[in-house]
Structure formats: C-alpha cells, structure tokens
Image (cartoon, rainbow, N blue to C red; front, side, top):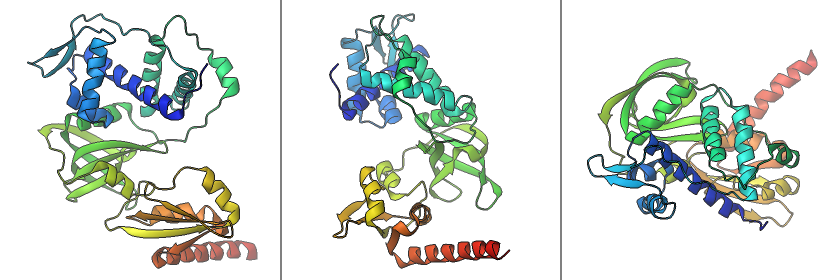
Length: 337
C-alpha cells in the first residue's frame, strides 16, 4: 500500500469530518449551509460550499437547497452515505479515535469521539476490514488526562457558538476561589491538552476572555444573537497566548537551551507559533517568541531545570529566581529536619 504523507492523511480526515458533520446536520433537519459549515470547521465559505457540491455532484447524495430555510436538506430522509474506503494511515487514526473513546468514556469529549468513531465505521465498505487487535500490537496511544465536563453543557456551548447566541453563566474563578455571574458571547471552543476552554466576549470585563469550560457551574443559552467582533482575529488571538494563558501587551521572550536539552527540543514541533530558532556554536539552541503573559512560559521553562535559561525579559528571570529560592527554602527546611 502506498504510503501517504501526514498532511494528506490529515486533509482527508478533515474532509471526512466535514462530510459526516454535514450528514448529521441534514438528518437532524437543521438545514446546514456554507456559512454554518465554514464557522464550525474554521474554513472559508468557498471550501464549505465545495464540500456541499461534492456531496451532491460526486457522491450523488439527494441534496437540495431550501430557500425558505436558507440551507440544504435531504430529499430522501432514509438515504445513507455511500461507503468510504480508508488508507492504512487513516485506519491508524480510527484506532486513535477508538482509544480516545475508551480513555474519555463518560466525559464530554468521550461521547463526541464515540459518536464520530461509530459513524466512520458504519461508512466503510465490505472490502475493508479493520483488525483493531492487530493494529493495537503495532500502535499505542496515551492521551492527556481531562477534567470532568458535563456532556450536555459541552453540547449547548458548542451550539451557542455555532448559532451565535448570547449566554449567561455562573463561573468559578479558581485563582480567586469565587463564583461570578457572567454574560458572554461564545466565539470558539478550544481544546488544549485535553481541557476545553471557551473563548468569549465577556460583558462583565468588556473584552475577550478564556473560560475553562469545566468551571461553568450554570449555563443559560439566551435567544439574543450577537455579531462576530469586527476587530477580533481568532488565529492571532490563539497565537498570542502560551498554554492558554494570555495578557494584554506583547512581550518578547528569549530562552537558551544547553547542548544536551537542545537535542530533544529540535525533535519536537514549535514551542509557540511565533517562535524563531537560532543554532548556537556550542550545540545549544536559542528560541525567541512573543507572548502576552509570562506565567505559562515560566512553567514551561522550569520543567527543564538547569538545562534552560531565560535570557529575556528580566521580569521572567526574576520570577523564576524567586520560585527557585522559595523551593530551596522548602527543601532545605525538610533536609534539616
């Protein structure tokens, strides 16, 4: 079997995801259109429209556009998607989905993974057989732990973001240990290392904020509609943070890894979308990036101990120095006992 690039496999899986999601919307009589598809998958309207046309013209699905509902629908309600054959790389992706479903069973993301996994399996041809046992012998996955999240709350948040409906919620702020009532416009749901975050315009703070979805205690989706903020660029906003921690003003950060740790850093993907790398004469690696908050960077650097040094800014150097001194005091005290 011809080996496909990771990019090609990712593109095909993304395409399948769009087709299955549109099919689900059609069966639920929610009349999806190019705008809804584009918003859900963060693609442009032309890509979304091409997917709909492909389903109608190439897959020959009985699709028709309803001017009254401003969306597409099936003219044959019991119609089934045609079978789809998958490549070897895509079968491995299916195995990952199955493993994720097991790890996250009972959580919000687990239910979504299980549903997607079942749809993909049901769409396969009889000529493709998947031996999950055999694949498991050659591949294994370890997913990040995730906090409990009410599946129904997760679904309602996603629907509110898609339909651009204003929400009211009771939110627990862990840093201050207090509950506050918030009125917000949900813009995007972001998964970071297994945790779900809601990016929304917060009317309480009059600005864009990140909310940990697991800390939402009560949620009400109102009938009020909102418009996407004209001056808000989601991609730029996501790039501004580090480990889902953001501030207001951009800060230039410079980190120096010694020759030993640089070997592993080189093997990994980018630390941050804005990063620039410079190879050092002694085998070390210098990384420069721009963020809007330093707390996440501090935690990242400290995991490497003496193998990583913050060169700039001085504020971050001071924070790490104070943290080291506090740790030293704790461990020196324990040793003396």
